[in-house]
Structure formats: structure tokens, C-alpha cells
Length: 509
Image (cartoon, rainbow, N blue to C red; front, side, top):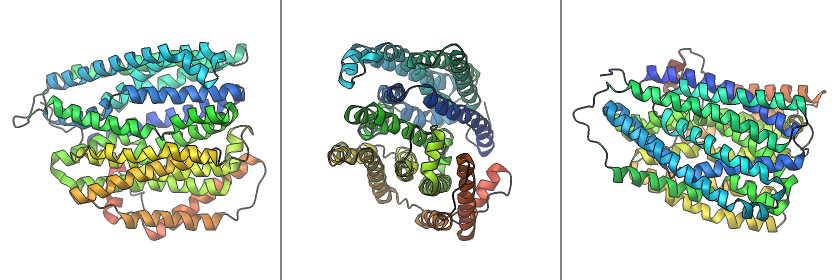
């Protein structure tokens, strides 16, 4: 029997190390690949590529049937209390369900692909789109294994290896292809197919080895196994919520922009959306979400109750805003210069659009935490109720498009959709559980950002452009950190917990 909890502070620190090293390496390679592809492909082909990527993300989400949330809620419970055989059985069932669901969905997409390409005017790219269906299935399996199985089981070492291998192979294949001829869309898709296959294979092998290592784990005598109906109820509640959320997701808006505004507008929106997704993925709470989510569940089911759950969620939410606020200030001060530099001057005069995307991340940065609290406290049914508010967003977006707002239409709808979702969840959590957010801490973070903006908006232009971007970013960061240090958005106990986690007295805000 394993005595040390896989969700203890010691285990969490080790997993964070594996996770962060993998994420940092993967993030650097992803960012380089993103900037390279936007320069390699013609603008029209890049617009098609980002639309295909958006459709891949949509398809993976729809085919998941809410099973990632089922795994996030119950795998930590099984890992803490069940025998090795029962953990293996649940994990293998989840993998089979996910693989079959994704296969069926990919087949349906293949059958409807000619009609979709005709509707979007992309019939000239049928070869690339058909090949991308294979990328969808292989990459989908890999992502679902990482998010639904390896992460709840705290196997970030395997996750790190899989992510880094995939990005290294993609970079190498793109580099090799560029030596022989000008890059085309189909070349990028072929490179993604090979890279996804290798990364997914490594993730599945790592999962199988870990499950085999659990065969000697014994169950707790007083533990009662959850009923399958209860587990599927949680899964379906989250699935319905996610389907409703997809109506105002940037992936859906990407297709609408392509259809309504054309491939060039889709390229601009897709590039800004890619930056939005990168920032969203690397906010502290989102970056560590695959570790935080099982920790939140374990803190509640392990006896801490709503008090411990709320304390952990509030700290994670403030950490996300702590990372986001300097980016918002910099987007306001020098967003146009940043986008021009990153895109190789392909997308100019888009600074305010980038700022709009960054502002939309404020409610999004808290959304996953709100969902996790609802699921952990047994109120998963709140999520479809909150997501239903998003039904207002598609008509709002279409109305704004008709008013001539262009790319601002999807950005406004995106931000309002996340805000309404959070407000609904927060209202009912406060009513049913007594949870209270740390409003004082949130207000202090917003204040630090506002004062930081007023202190840096006067910065003079510099030459060359890359030097101006770097200097202005550094000044914004220094100003924000100084103001935050003065007003202390984190309580003393929270600072102590963070410093204890990193084993250094470095966090002073």
C-alpha cells in the first residue's frame, strides 16, 4: 500500500517542477513555430490554417462527451481510496470511451467535409483539410490522454516528454521542408501529423506503464465506490455546459469571421486568437490547472470542505490576475508595436484589438476555477445553467457585425459570455455553499494595473522596434510589481503558502 498521498504538498511540488519545465520548453517552441508559420505561409493560406486549428480544437472538445471532467472529478478520488485494479479499470474505460467517441466524430466530419468546404469557400484546400482529419484523431487522442488521464493521475513527467517531443519534431520537420521548397499549407499539415503521432504514442505508453505500477495499491476499507450513473451525470452536466459555451468560443467565431469577413480578416483574427490562447494557457491558474483541479477536488473530498476549497480557489484566481494584469497594461501601452513586430509587419494597426482580447481574459482567467468549485461541491448542474447565458452571445455578435464593428464583434461577445458565466456560478455558489471571493485582493490587482498604466503610458518611442517593445514591456512590469508590492493584494498567509511551495521567500506581493 502506498502511504504518501499523490496529492500531498511534496508530490505537488515535484509535479509542478515536471510540469513547468515541460511547459516552458513547449511554450518557447510553440511560440517560435507560431511566429514562423505566420511568416512562411501566404496570408490567405495562413487564414485557412488557423481556421483548421480552430476546428480541431472544437472537434476534440465536442467529441469528449464531458469525459475529461468525469476523469478530473473521480480519478483523484479513486487514486486516493480505490485499489489498483479499480483505478486501472476506470482509466482504461475512459480511454476506450474517448477513442471510440473521437473516431465516430472524425468519421462524421469526413462525411460532411465537402459540404463544409463548399460553404466556407475552401474547396481549393481539400487535400490539406482531408489530411487534417488524421491530425484531428491522433492529436485528439493525445490531448485527451494528457488532460483526462495523465494529469489527474499526477504524471506530469510523461506529459512533459510528450509535449516536448511533439514540438521538437514539428519544428524539425518544418525546418527540413523549408530547405527544399517554399512552404505550403499541406506541408504544415503533414508535419503536424507526424509530430502528433510521436507525441501521442509516447503519452499512451507512459499511461500504460503508470497503470501497471498501481497493481499493488489496496483500497481504503471505508471507501464506497461512486455509482456509474452519478459519474455520467457529472460528465453530461459539464458536456452540456461546454456545448453551450462553444457557441461563443473563439473557435466558432473564427469560422464566422472567415465566412462573413473573408480569409484576410480570418488571418488577423486567427493570429490574435493564437496569442490569446497562448496567454490563456500560460496564466498561473491555467498553466497549473491540470495540477490545481485535482488538488481542489482533493482538498474538498479530503475533509477540508468549502473553506479550504474557497481559500485555494481564491489564491489561484489572484495568481492568474497577477500574471495577466501586466500584459493588459502592456497591450494598452504598446500592443500595436508588439503585433507588428511579431507578425513581421503583416498585421498593423491591430493594437486595440489585441487589448480587447487581453481584457476578455480577465473573466476567462476565473472561469475554470468557478467550474472546478461547482463540480467539487456537487453542484455540477450549475454549469449548464450558467453556460445557457451564452445563448445570447451569437445573436449579439451577428448584430454587432451588422452594425459594422468588424472584428470587435466577436471580441465583445467573447468577453461578455465569460463574464455572464462567472456571475451566474458565483451567485449560486455563494447561495448554496457560502463561498465568498476575495474581492479586496482582486480590486488591489486592478488598482496596481491602472496605476501602472498611468505611470508608463508616457514612455517615448525607441528604435529599432524590437528594442522599444522590450524596454516598454520591462518598464510596465517594474511599475506593476512596485505598486502591487506597496498595496499587497495577497494576504500574509497566502504569501507564506506560495513561498513554502517554491521553498524560497521570494513572493513579496
